[in-house]
Image (cartoon, rainbow, N blue to C red; front, side, top):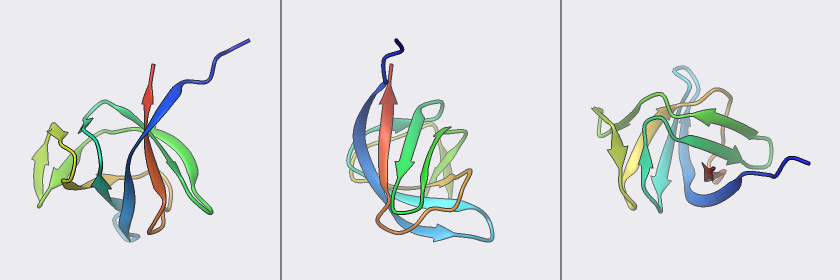
Length: 88
């Protein structure tokens, strides 16, 4: 039996730019490029690896709690969707 990976809430979607496929996340915990996140909401439910992220239009490798970041998302997301860090 495979064990479900642990997930920790690390933020929520505050905006989505559909034309460029970018979600804006208000972080409550740290996040790094290469981390795996799970986005879950009324219609969204998918996992992806963070390929790159930006803070105020600057590429960054990591961000801290309370920062607002933009990341490319693989699917449409909505304001209020929860973002979880997949651990292990």
